[in-house]
Structure formats: C-alpha cells, structure tokens
Length: 246
Image (cartoon, rainbow, N blue to C red):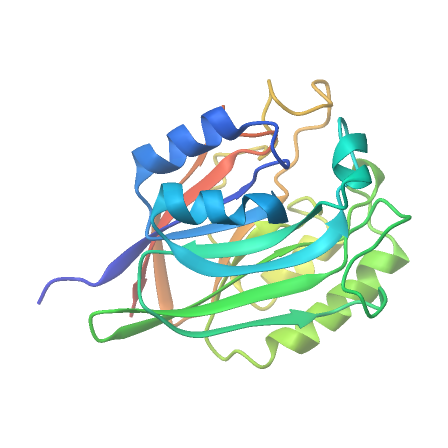
C-alpha cells in the first residue's frame, strides 16, 4: 500500500516584502499544505489564485508593526495567519488565546492578537490535523510574563486536539523556557543541525543572535521526515517537511 503523506511548508513571509521569492519558492516546492504568518488580508485572493489552493485566514493586527508599514496601516490593511491547501478540507476553525479585545486585532503594541488557525485535511483515507500560530514576541528571545501567560493559554487550547501537527513562528528560541513548554508535550521536528531559523541575509537584524524560533511540532500519531530550513525566502527561513499518519 502506498504511503499517504503530505508535504507541508511553514514560513513567516513578513507581509509583502518578499513576494518575488515567496511565490517562486512555493511554486517550486509544490507543497500540499502551506502555513503562513504575517500575510496581508488584501492578498488572500492572490495567494489562493497563484497557489491554486483554498484555506482559512484570520487577522491578528493592523499592519503598523515593523519596517515600511505606515501606508498599510493608514489603509486599514491587516496581517494575520493562514493555512492554504490543495487537499479537501473537512474542518476549519480558529481559536484565540490572549486578551486582546473583541475586534480580533491589536493596534498599539508590537505584539499581534494570538490566534491558532486550524484545518483538518484529507488525503486518501487519512485525516491530518494541522494548526499554525504566530506567538508572542519579546526582545532578544528572552521569556517574560506575557509569554508565560500566553503559553499557558495556548496549551489549554491545544488540549482540544489529541492529534496535531503544529507549526509557526514561536518567537521563543529552542532551548529556552517557552520552547521547552511545547517540547514537553510535542515532538520537536526541527533537526538539531540547524542553529537558527532567522534568515542571515533578509532579517532586519542581520547581526541578530542565531535562534531557532520557527517550529514544526507533532503528536505521536504522525511521523515527520525530510525536514529542512530554506533561506532566501523571507526574513525567517521556510520550514519544509513531510508528514504521514502512523
């Protein structure tokens, strides 16, 4: 019997700064599931058309955070998290895990509204449960009380999913307290040969610390293989991997 596995990509695309490389990369890789952070709401139709995929987008912030965002914020454009797929979708949902107001976006702080975006996709007779998020930012990757509160809230939400593939930008370095909270519950599938998931040439802090902050986590129901980090796509390296049901 042929193994039923899916190819997945997760990447923080940094709004519209890297579309030339982002689209070229995704079209070359041909993943079946794409998890994106910092994607602009105005560009969701373009991603669906160019990738020939459907999916779910949830806004998290007005685009007034980071370089070159003044015009985006003035136009009321939001960024957020999305999952796109070429596979049949049997379930989609999103879950908030912070106290950021009823409108679903933040306006005044650096940090985004905390949302977990979730899809169940079907391939053959197998179902794959996939979620992505953009976790709380802190300076220099140091843990703080806001991260601790949000991680407690996130882990509570995650108890609803007995099996899961979880990916995204966690803004917390491997080996630290917050990453460790996830590692206590899930399998960390980023190979230890990588010492950073920040792009050395495209990240705004070219001399920043080497930190693995982008994750690909799994419950024991899944086998994850062939994981690699690809630079030259965005300010974060893209995470690429294959997932199969055990």
